[in-house]
Amino acid sequence: MKPIVSIIMGSTSDLSVMEKAAKFLDEMEIPFEMNALSAHRTPEQVEIFAKGAKERGIKVIIAAAGMAAHLCGVIASMTTVPVIGVPINSTLDGMDALLAIVQMPPGIPVATVGINASLNAGILAVQMLAVEDEALQEKLAGYKEGLKKKIVKANEELAKVSFKYKTN
Image 1 (cartoon, one colour):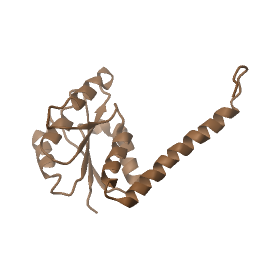
Image 2: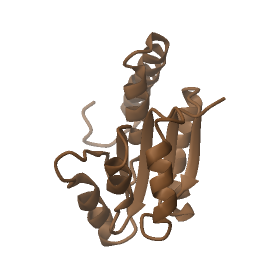
Image 3: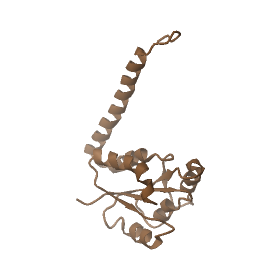
C-alpha cells in the first residue's frame, strides 16, 4: 500500500500534536506516511522529499512546525502537491509559527489550520482527496453527522443539569 498523504513534522516532539491527524487518516482508511524533517537541520532531505513527493504518489502534504516554522513554506516552494501547515505551540503561544506559516509570498500557498489543529489538517486533507472520490465523500458525511449527534447528545445531557436559576 503506497501512501497518498504525507505527515511531516519538524521534530518528533510534535508527534503528540500530529497523532490526531494520523488517527483521523487511519479512521478514513487513507494510507499515509509520517516523518520528521527539519528545514534548518536537514535541508537536503527536505528538498529530496518535496521534489519527489508527487512522483511517489503523494496527493496532500500535512507539514507541522513550531517557532520560525519554515518547513511548510520550504516544502510548498518545491512541489505542486498541496501543503497544509499546522503551527505548533512551542513558543509565543504558537503565534510565531502561525504567522510564519500563513504569511507565504505570492505563488507559494500553504493552507493553514489553527495552532496545534492537526485534526482539522487531517480533515482538510481528506476533503481535498474526496473531491473526486464519492466513497470518501460519504465517509466524511458520516463523520460530520457523528459530530452533529455529539452536540445533540451534549444538549440532552445539559438539560439534565440543574441549577436554581437555570430555565432550560
